[in-house]
Length: 369
Ligand SMILES: *Cc1c(COP(=O)(O)O)cnc(C)c1O
Image (cartoon, helix red, strand yellow):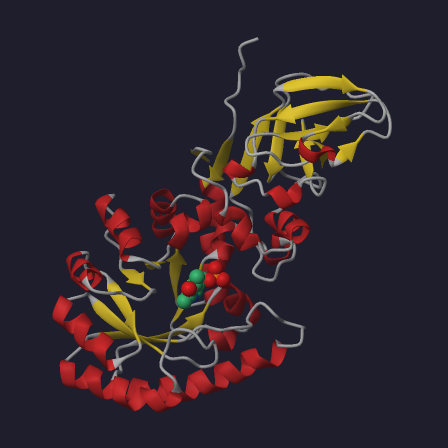
């Protein structure tokens, strides 16, 4: 039989992404929405997602690397782009050529930014994340360098370490960072009155209106995933990615037969096994072996046996009538029968971000809606 479906793909729902942009904008009030499209838009395709986000009302884009910014410019995106990661050597020249805004936290960075002719500089303060950003005692030198160099300071920013933790051990730290940042940013804004103040990622945007300031930088929520690792529907977000494949083979096995590498699963009863031609090379993590469900023709069935590089196996059940060609959803779906990135993340012991970022380039992105 010649199959009617391709092996597998990641379907990207444009309408869902546009909906999520508007949902974030409604939450952020008058603040500008920056669509964070780093890491190929968390696996959703940076060029397409950037266009959709801008059309739906996002005012700017943010990426981590200069190469990511270059890709967007090459595909005709003219919106402001913020490169949030560090730049080194020749990357500064490329940043000038790409007309991006950059993030700096040192006097050297400010001078490099001015020399390279970038479109603007965001001064990043470390209010408690403990990664990029100037500590309180480093702010005066940073500010002086920005004044002395004549830098165009378009932003004053920070990043929260625990915005996603609303109720846990670290819940209070978010408030501490907010207080520290507000004080430092308000003082700096005296010197740079046209700079936009921004701090919030997706979690902070939905968690606390006081974190919104002039601009929000949202990634995970754009893609319809919950920044709080809960059901995204609780926040009115709609998942954007669906990973689809099909049953490529069905076989009947006997009780005690094993399936897959290492014989990690044995049938407790005679049953029908479906083979789905997707594996860890596609980003379906090996940790999901004997540890996840798939939707076969909308019906939830367990993934049994090890996840191979190119294949997984599901237990269709002894009574099943699913044949070769039955549609399989590994991530996504609608209604009660759906598999969220949050569910797969919980099974794997990771976060939803890693689930969508991990969907590999072997799965073509197919844009619908
Ligand atoms: C990735 C990133 C964001 C977006 O975070 P989400 O949790 O995906 O909304 C915002 N700000 C910075 C500095 C980032 O690196």
